[in-house]
Length: 359
Image 1 (cartoon, rainbow, N blue to C red):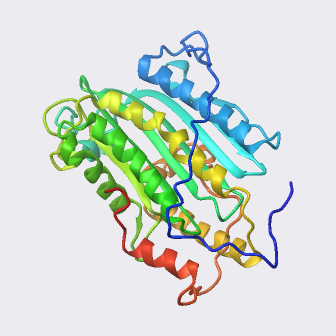
Image 2: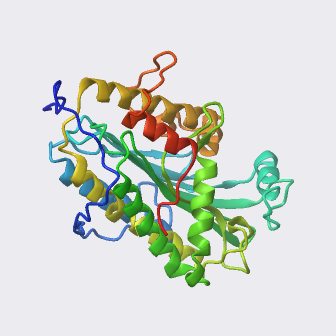
């Protein structure tokens, strides 16, 4: 792998919008997944089929963009018997552009324990019996892309659905974690998700859904011990359903919860890959790479200390699939304080006080 670390040359991000034109990057047409192609013979519905197709398309697209010949592994696993469901963990490591990238699908069938049922019913899910014992179905596609260059931000996203008691709830989102802040990247990224949210907002002229999802993302990806947000945010949502105004969004409503969730996933490549193409070949110094690895430490701190999914999964979950989101090279240097007036300082100041990126 050719290193782009240049000792005598550094890049200073610009706050100006350069109006860089971006193109839609093609994705390969793939056959639809079905129960015949699933490794355990579990019957799949339309949304589960969508997750598997999207995983394949994302992995194929990233391999083309990386261009190094590095490929995603395909690790299929089962959960107990065939009837309990299965998952596919796909990981690319050691690429030229992506030092590590992971895309995981899980399709689970099970019975709610009393502990989990109480936790869910406490979040307003009246259909869930707090005593447990109800059958449930859960499916999710989650991904995280860790670039090699500090000039390219980390990208994390997921979509998921949970069904029990005759009802379905949807969640998901996408967020960006830069190490050097290019304002036009953040503005473009948020603008694309705002447009998607507005399309499914029953009050689209007010952009209530985007405002609620952005606020939730800012609040969720927060590291209290550091008094910093993990990145520049994006959108995040949970407990979406098709009934009356969703309390999870503070009263904002989407007109089709499943279609909205799919649309968020369909935006992932178009929101991220143009940023990768703009920044992948920028030179960076060893000091900037050191900062990159120091900031990756914040990423792990959030995941292990505060992320609800990781903490839940560590209690008996499949550890390799859970920790696959961790970046491969990380530093924890003591009491790192960026210099006043530096780009590193500007990033930290933005992470302490989230900005409005999309008007």
